[in-house]
Image (cartoon, rainbow, N blue to C red; front, side, top):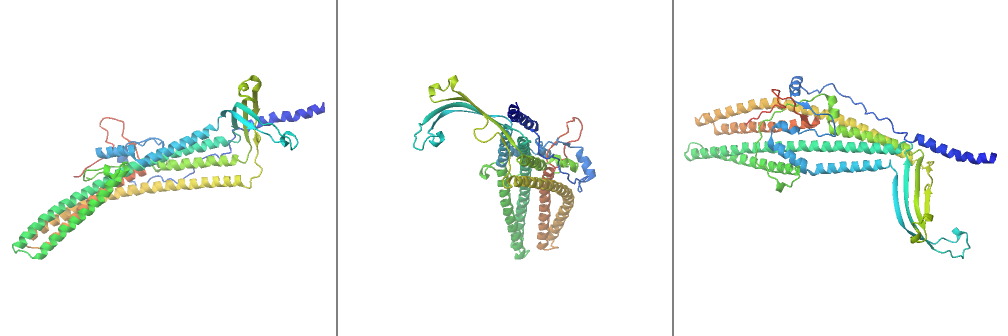
Length: 507
């Protein structure tokens, strides 16, 4: 009786052990994830409260979902050509396609991780030919065992019970990586949209400079003819003629330099559109003054709007889940396996009922494996996972700081460039008036031709600075929208409400 009880005790412990392992199955060793705190100012330093309130009334902020499109924000510039270029870039840009392919890879990896939660079933069919050794059969060394052929047709199944949440943590890490790549795709998309807009405004700025120097070359050509006539009449000396020729050649040389820069800018724009420079040509379109009031909003909203911040945050979540995977490696793994099918020595007898066979448990190894000694490999992996998480935390905080800086830079640039443009307009008017007076005095003989040249040169310089400020202001507005995460939707209310942006063109 005692012997029977003793023999039954181990048999009872096995189901108890399995039940215990099933209870702990799904227990997670992953640290509870919380987004690290970052210092967020109450308001942007460079934001003008009065301008901010007026601009905010004209915009409706898009929903803070990093995986959603940010809207066609470039339409606030009211430029059909820019709208068409943006559509071309989104359809053909190769960097955007590469980012989309990376997202597809991440989703595939997530699908592979999720597949570990389900049983793996395989089927096989085929023969095996074997001649065992005499020793394996308990025969003499000079015995000659016969070779045998064994036909098999069977299905096998394998399933890992998720003890301590290893599989779940792997799935969580893969899911967070997918979300990270989704945010990175939106970041690449936003960067592409901003790059296209800035390249477009640069080309148009250079067109305006080219038009300015083209007019200057024509005017200086006419001035040279007039000076030449006066020289031929004996009214002036050859020095004035030489100076007129110098100014004409200088303007022509500067025009060639602008043409070179314009060609390079057009080539860069073609690349953004997914075209070779030979396939793209942009007709000259001088830039006018563009003014768009952009609301900065609250700094706290920036953490949700910027796709690069969202990507950095998802990278932290993935790293945190990988810590759980590394921790689970210290604990037992329970793998349930089995096989069911037929085996026979003859192919014709393979599907006979008497040929059926099954196997519960692994063909080699054990169902339950427990790591004991690995020379510190698992601890090293755990240390690496923790350090990777700390690295991602630091990168996230740095990304947030960089985002705040970019917004402050954009707000300051737009504000200061607006003030500078107003001052520059006054400088242009003063230079034009001085040039008119110098020409009148020269015709009356009250001043030298040198004074006329100097006044004309000042007008050209002031007008060129004004054109460059217009281009810089347009590009800075684009940079500010990009820094804010891009994308606003126009107010849905109809009627006499304000327009989504204020746009003024100066011819």
